[in-house]
Image (cartoon, rainbow, N blue to C red):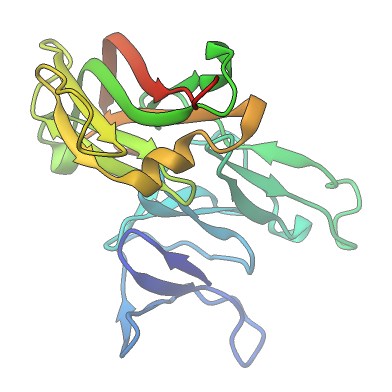
Length: 265
């Protein structure tokens, strides 16, 4: 069982029936009612192997049947070459700091399976690019950040339903998940600049060709970890991730931080 943050539903999949036999049914709970789904692809989900992946915007399963993502309609094969034996009782978690999923194995039924796996997919499986900006590099202490501007020149495409669809999304890590900032419809052969300025207060001078988003809490939260303060941004195809063909191409990316020094600083 896991909660799909993007779709706002709790998903229960697989498990054991009254006869202790494996089940492959799947149910979703939206806070009011339970709805059963019958995906065309059958996946036997073991307990503890479901986790929400905010970069894929889907629930991720890793276990004896391979690695799959539930998109609300069907299971999508993530193309992983490693299969985590169900006997190893893998537990899957998403590490927000690294932006990746981990599987931890180990059980009495599989004493040689005590290890940790990191899900790292090829570009055509998980076509997302990530960029981190460190405020510590400015070498200023106790400064108040007024705005953060992210410019990302990128083109992308995906193939939902076998049809090529161009476009890229720009996202920011808000401490809980990847939040959408902006998007365009340009494919990988015609990169276009996405520019968003996160503003702490409306008194900041305008930024040419950028979309303003006034969000004091988000701006304050981007650099709240002292010397290790970093802001994380990412791009992905608007068509989604985990498809047979998906491409992201970046020409340039930059982050500009405006800050105010305290009096006497």
